[in-house]
Length: 193
Image (tube, rainbow, N blue to C red):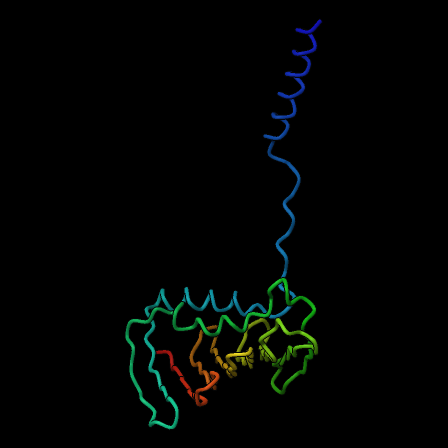
């Protein structure tokens, strides 16, 4: 009797295992569509494109009230170069519902979407994100990032311009203040070649 019960149990287990190996099974849940504009996805795509074509950049950098410096960088690590722009990603799970969205049609058929941080969202450093698109193709992205704590405060204005889906210009203008130190003002702009 025990042998028969063990055989039935083993046969049932084998049937379950074989059923799990079939081609048709439960479908995986669909990938979650970003609630807001996918800055991270766009930047990841741009980093890949720019790296593939070995794009160079001419940079204009200014620190404090010093004269601006211009330098051409022929070999760019694009992931590092655009790292600050990844801070404009507002699609993190903790930020769901943190932004109000306003859309305005512009002359020429472009659409401007403005994502504004709702009051009472201390974990949302992006105060505002503005995306101008022609159809599904982004043309300009601008963000204001504000960070404050007991030792440090900073504000950054980020802007990217794209032409035919490729990054052509970007800039960062910011201020940074550490307790007991003067405010540091800086700007950097890049023109992609």
